[in-house]
Amino acid sequence: EPEVTQTPSHQVTQMGQEVILRCVPISNHLYFYWYRQILGQKVEFLVSFYNNEISEKSEIFDDQFSVERPDGSNFTLKIRSTKLEDSAMYFCASSNPGTSGTYNEQFFGPGTRLTVL
Amino acid sequence: SQQGEEDPQALSIQEGENATMNCSYKTSINNLQWYRQNSGRGLVHLILIRSNEREKHSGRLRVTLDTSKKSSSLLITASRAADTASYFCATDGNQFYFGTGTSLTVIP
Image: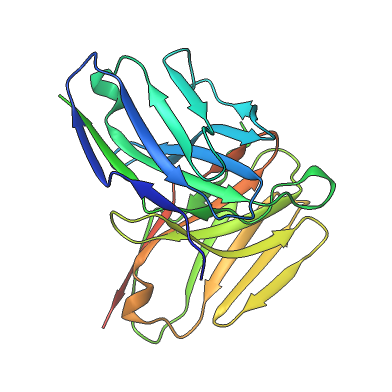
């Protein structure tokens, strides 16, 4: 069964450093997403990406964040200058669009645990 | 906010019992989805119910949706220890919102 994969599973970085989290969505999906989950808190939407551009983003997704689909398979989240509060689990997801512009079932990767020291 | 909010926050039952979790949301939706998250893992999609549907079944899962009350419920029948996880509802709008989750513990 196709699945979303993410690498690395755990990333440790120093405050102020740049990190790139990588995801390989399901191959025939068209929508891609990043979420984060701070330990013990709810899953928070960061950004959705469709047709090579951001379709929606949350207030959390500020200028320190960027996303890219550098080739036909990878989808990346870059955090330019990490802060302590960026420590969280980051989940990638992918889906196909639902009918009439609705969101359809999203398939989630296992997550990357980011620890900022 | 369009966030779904689940209750109870935590639920502990014996294996074989039914578990019911509720979700409330604030604005109109196109669909509502339920996900499961095992500790430290990603989210697994359980079931999607569209705004024009009132009830949906999938195996031991039964979901209801009341758009007039802006609420949904997830019923897991004949629970198993493996059902122990956190359960989230998620609503779609311009963005995809998850609630805070119900932590279900099924005691063998």
